[in-house]
Structures are given as C-alpha cells and as structure tokens.
Image 1 (spheres, rainbow, N blue to C red):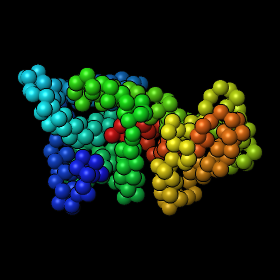
Image 2 (image 1 turned 180 degrees about the horizontal axis):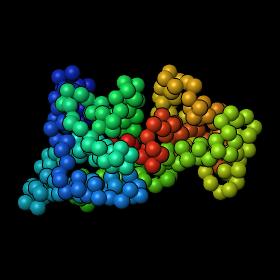
Image 3 (image 1 turned 120 degrees about the vertical axis):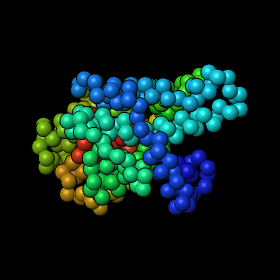
Length: 305
C-alpha cells in the first residue's frame, strides 16, 4: 500500500520484500527515547507517551539537519522522504514499547524479522502470534491509512509541516489532535460506552431497552460515539470491512453482537432526533471491539501507527 501511494504503481513481490527489509533496518530506537519511555509514569496515557516519544525522535531528523546546513529547497523532499521512511519504521517499536511497559511488565519487544511484513512484526512486538490477530492488524492498519486531508490529525500534520517543521514534529502534533475524544480516541470512547451499557443493562438486551439507553445518552447532552462523519453520508466502508471480518471470525462474541444490534437501531434514533447529518456508523464504531484484546486506553495507538 505504501509503495502504491508513493509511486502510483502496484509493487512486485521483490519490491515488497525490499521495503519490508528497508524498514527493518531503520527501526532501531535511539537510547534516549527508550530511556524516556521507560521512565514515564504508568498513569500517563499511551497517546501522550507516543506523541512525546515521536517529538524526541526529532533528534534523528535528516531533514532538520540538512535544512540547517542550507540545502537547496528543490532537495527538501529527499530528506523529508528519508525522515518519513525512518518514522514509519520506528513507530511500531515506539507503540510496542509503550504497550509492553504498561501491560507486559516492561518486557522487551524482541528482534524485528526482516523477512516478515511490517504489520506482522508489529503484532509480534506486541506479543501476539495468533494468525487471526495478525490478519486483523493488517486489515486495521490498511483501513486506517485511508485519511483525506480534512480531519484534525491529517490537517494538523499539513499545517505544522507547512512551517518546514520536520516530519517527526508534524506527526507528533497530529497525534495530539488524534488523541481527542472526537477523533482517534473515539474508538476508546466507544468501548467505554459499550461497557457502561452492559453494566447497566446486562449482556442480552432488548431493542427497546437499547433505544432507551441511546435516547438517555442523547438527552444528557452527549453523542453516541462511533456514529456520524464529517464527510461521509452513508455507512463508513471501513466499518463494513471490520464487520465482515467479525462475521467470519467472531460471530458469537458478545460485544460484536451488541455492535451489530446497535447498527440496526442507532441510525433510526439519530434520524428521529433530527440533528445528525450522517446517522451511520464510522470506522471507530467497530475498531475498538476488534481490538478488545488490548487494554482500553491502548486501543487508539494502532491508529497512530
């Protein structure tokens, strides 16, 4: 996918293999970033840790160094590209290090296998080897790469980058936008809302009780997390991709069944309320449920990767 986006061409297997190995070579984190991550308090949100670590990676910026040396503007893109390649390679290591520190007693992320693809290495670093979860992560990372320039995080990265801040600084700023509950944190908000729903109503809930719970959410001045989109006016196709995966691999999972039930009810309630321009589910309505193997506060981090 990265090759296609950058070149416009579908890569050969040889080119895919080269790219995987290139990222593996670039993935090592500088010691000062590892030390910083190891010393963060455990109550610091993973998104805050990720943003801080990426900001600190600015010490490795080839663009910042070249700009300081007075490189011609026609060559800016070459060094921005190098930084982007390095950042893509290092992000899974940063996210996995945060996850391991918080939920695996600081155990090491292990060595990167240059013969495996990027997402496979990421799941290995997290500590998961189930082929089904590896395939899920491939799906998750692919559909979350689909971002036009108008959302908060993408717009922020463009804005900060327009000041010739290097890609590390621009991406870190974008992550602070993504950490908001109306953006990337929305999948965490969905899980919390579903958990509250189950605590109050139990696991086998009638459609009527669900309608009442949804109305209570709206009447209290809150939104139903995971529904609506700034651009789309129909069901988010990324939601549909995840739904198809869940139907195939975990059709009896209680949370998935609840999400599927809400899919039939929430849009009608939002239309009845008359305020929503788009009453249909977005990508966040489903992603948290598929990633429920992870602790709730870590759910937004893969979207950053």
